[in-house]
Image (cartoon, rainbow, N blue to C red; front, side, top):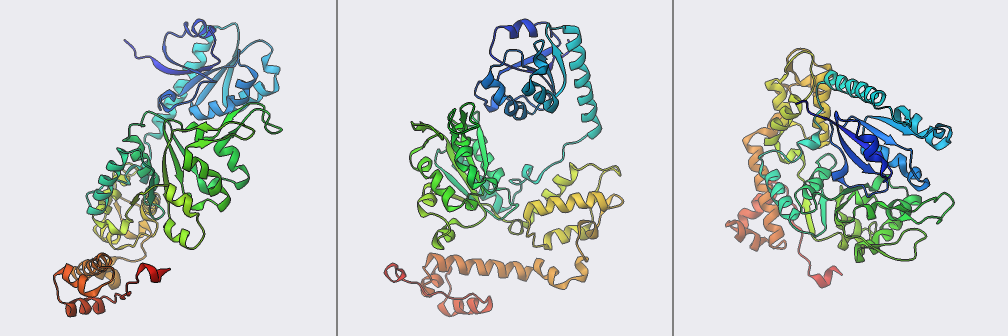
Length: 458
């Protein structure tokens, strides 16, 4: 028996759906009502290439938000169904021009509609075969690896996933902070509920209230219908604030009530709305430092939660670099057949400081796939200026002495922190003499900060 192809049917909630759709026996229909709350479970998978946009019975309020639904569902090809004369409606005409490949006027002609849908499905299938691959992003591999740094991070994320507390994720750009946040959501009890992502850096101050809290009908000139804000859309699920350190002081003040009480109020609304959303935030900058410098509100910082996780930079997980590089490389397209890294390239990967972290690794590999010739990827293909044998300073970074120095510096730093900068106590923690501790500090040029009592700090 031939497997039915998935077909999204977007329409108003009316009895005519079953009558019109009954003739499409070769399709597995996913009916979606345009005024129902859109949840992740309602969004079709990647194989739902075609959809029917039944605009014949839409109300004015449904028509006003139709474009948002057509975009959110992510269907590649839409076919519209209209009543006679609807094509002369400016809004309907605009929607068809923008989103639909074709339209069908009632009464429904099943054979004609089947032909249109079959053709669009076939073209989508052909394009998918022509592309032949799905590029692997660094987000797909960000948490992979066996290094102690990423193993401990994964363990921490798993523990945080089983709580309902807010989580603050720190990390340099390109370390996969958003991936970590999605990992928490996907392993939590809220995994079947919506994950709403807000890019704080792209949130215009003038639109913050409307974007986050929504508005009621008639609250301003173009408010033809009530609209939920992003925060309210996360009810029951998870709200992810990406780059929370990018919020201005005014924007921080705007979200304070939600952080404190779990309530929002739409523009033009007169009643508070309870929102049950688990909060996760990411930041590239240490928020505590921003609080101390007056650039971030302390009351907002403390309400972002006490559960913090720091994603390690790529330079601190060198043993994972080759694994990650080969994972990205194996998924990249190549007309020249399989590609592999030269030994000299592998050494360059380990020696490089990776200021752009995983994003830089991905970009360098993609560059090599475009510019490199032959089955072996050389250092120059990835943008490394010289081979390791010609760069003594880089080679020294992988020497045994370099690793020993790194371990010594970490031991000094950790013991001083635990001993509140008391040299004698720090030496006892390392089970060495005070004199030996001073020698290590001098050798590795570690400055000693005298501890200050809390009263003197003020």
